[in-house]
Image 1 (cartoon, rainbow, N blue to C red):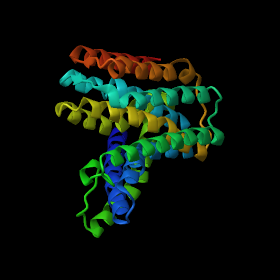
Image 2 (cartoon, rainbow, N blue to C red):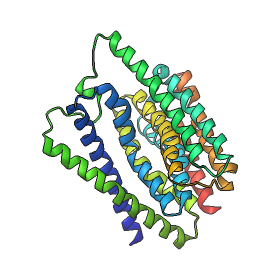
Image 3 (cartoon, one colour):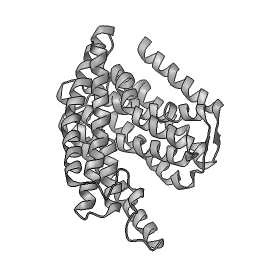
Image 4 (cartoon, helix red, strand yellow):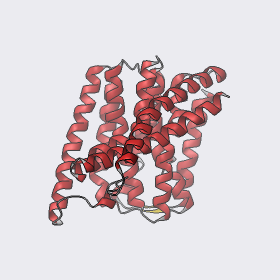
Length: 317
């Protein structure tokens, strides 16, 4: 039964997260907030809401290993699994020109995060450093996006350029989406955390391993679905950008906010293995970003096999 509750919690998180994005985006646009601001802030934070709620709830419930494992495991899964599966299915033809700067920013954030983890436990000042770095990244993205839109002689983003935007959505529907999101997210987070801790006890696993495996894979499923859809539409750069953006937010926003809620100890296993696996997986993307390598089925199989081996190592240790 505990596995059923884990699935129910995960489904609530995914559904409520999507509802919150739709409601918040359309409310902001109705209130006259520029679509560019909506795209860079509300959408970005909203799509990371499930991971954020999981991490905060884990810290409050005294299982911070799930919070840290969720972020580190999700970033590793985003590269090896979220890109590996669509590459295995269709192949991904990269044109990484537009993602090079974002990739370097992600690597910089990864190195900053690893450095802060060695000053364990992660506390409020670590959180402020990460959120400060996030503010700089968002400010830079806003300036670039505003310049790009001005160059195209457009004052705002078109409706179809903002995820979840529907200018014809009635007010009652916006309110329903917001209520579903705001109520469903904490309930889903609580269900998944409770089920995860019970599963950890049943199998004799640590909360960190559960965070790195079950919770990380679960919260990466929306990214996987988005990336597979982009692969079949031959939009490999969308898939790559989705992974880079998600990893960047996971590192700076989610742990940054969670560290303000309470201290997050960093277990020795993270310092010895998991953080470096996350960094190595991220660096694997370099030739695809800078050399525009074709990520074919062989690469997809290698990525998936590497991830499977890593999961086996976690469970067996």
